[in-house]
Image: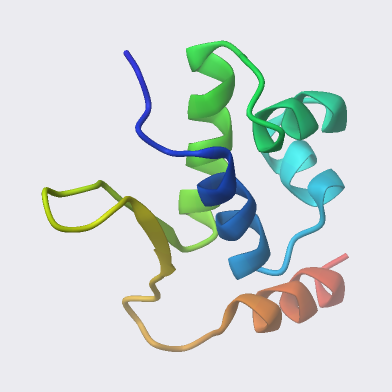
Length: 96
């Protein structure tokens, strides 16, 4: 299974939710070095990429597949419309 997302898509998704590399690596249960390899466009396993995608989707990122007219992308979604990505960080720190 190949992924149609570029290294820029993964970096954009991470930045969209306001995470540092270390935060995404922890959420995806991978090393920061492995995440750096993804963001540098190096080869990693499909399972590793899936872990990163799942972690970002749980945070509210939607991956958008490329079409004939447009390239792939990401966007932040919150069906309830209650929080922004940065507000989630504040909630996380209050629950510790």
